[in-house]
Amino acid sequence: MTQTIIIDEEFKGLLPELGRATFELLEENILQNGCRDSLVLWGDILIDGHNRYEICMKHDIPFNTISMEFGSRDEVLIWIISTQVSRRNMTPIQLAHYRGLHYEAEKRVQGTYDRVAFGIESGQNVHFQNSTAGQLSEHYNVNPKTIRRDGKVAVAIDAIGKASPAAKKMVLSGEVNVGKQVLEALASKSQEFIEEVALQIEDGSFDRKTLDLSSPDEKGGAGTAGSGAASAAPKPYAVISSLTSGFNTELRRLTKVGDALELKAALRAYIDMLEDYYKQI
Image (cartoon, rainbow, N blue to C red; front, side):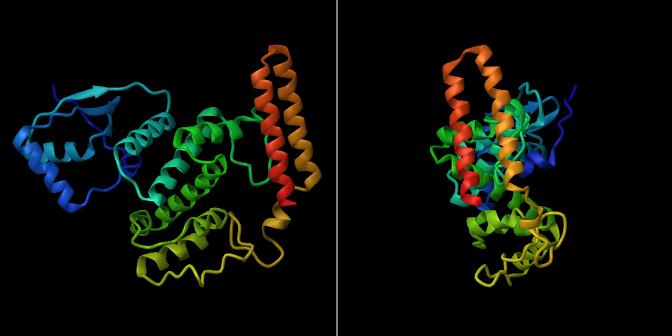
């Protein structure tokens, strides 16, 4: 019985598109030697081997499959990213995008939320975000702040892709140099604003030097002067109170456990988040 294989567009979209010459070389190799590497499936969903699958289906070439078990789509996403990073040479923007996607997925797996911009964490998750960035910084050999910034880069690039897949491809390929700082700033803009930028990228009129990122246009709609991030941001006392409350909850839990290393990690995370917020005031 022939196995049904499902192509998931989100997972497929994580894979860098092969150039025509590279694809033709792969096709020629498979025609001569068969499909020697197994396709990887999660249930019926293909998660590795999309180009090989396309070639095999086109020429009616047999192939083998192996199955892997994951607890969630985010765990699959993390596996795909790790696999791609380990086997490919990437441009800095491609790598930043992957690191950011990995970071966002890890936070969802751990049940945390990206609120570092306001320094907010609650309950026993007070040090999760910091530790997640720290863990990935060791994995990718970069600074934890780079990981957090890459999270914003990934959000912006995917928002651009939502407006224009062609623009996203142009950014990731390096055909259009948007710049990481611009992408970080775009992450806090409304989808309408990002759609305008995406269209400029697509039609060739984009110029980051003339792009106005100073307007208080935050997510949720275009803003007007005086109605942007500053008015929407939590008040300092509320932020600090939330940080302290979360840390106290975590402190009580760790006191019962008696793990000195976890306590030091939580304390360091609390201090770092206070310092981050101190710089924003």
